[in-house]
Image (cartoon, rainbow, N blue to C red):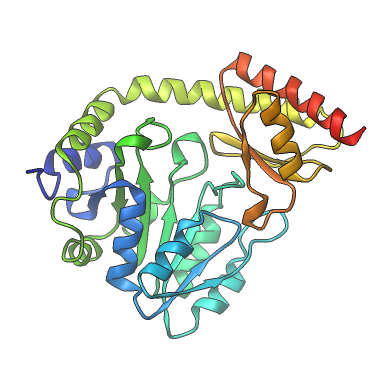
Length: 300
């Protein structure tokens, strides 16, 4: 059977993050960690989410018997800390989810905005740093200061292990102790534990690739900005969110017909929103060429 506590992996994560082992819990992907958080602390209570954002916060809240409360982001997709604090003032508020860098819009939340939320609420404030290796400022330095801070991380993005389902949580030991009482005992299989340890051992190689992706993101963003009618948003992730005058579903289908697959995120409350992952330089060039062609066809 797998080690229920994944001790060897947790020890390596402690070295990687600077967080003591007692403040770390690993899970079968961040999805399992999110659900465990909600089952442990939020059943019957309110959970604040900031759409447009990662859809599974709402899904898992409903599964756990919590009530998701939406505090929409501003038009530029920044969070409104004052409105979050107003919503969190309700006595039933248990958890606040803030994704930074945000999925699907890519923007990072300034740490000072998160600090404003932490200062004014006793609810668990969960900062999802799934894309933190690609940009944005981590909240790890705030852990010693705020016992209600929880940070989520994953091996799915920068480390390419989405299929092996390894996520982890950083918090204070008291929070982790409560979570360990609820989580499944053998939640992370032996192979995934070992693979994650190997990846951490060779993390320098992976982070070298991350640097190349960041460079490619800048070039791709500039290329998108040079296309008339395309509105590009700042990104601290491994993807870029953009809008065009053409409805997202139509443009998505047009690109698909050209052999290019990107993500239509207009169904997540972002009208005409599309998300493209940063590829290799030749892939990015093909995408830009095909996008121009698809836009010309649809606008013409």
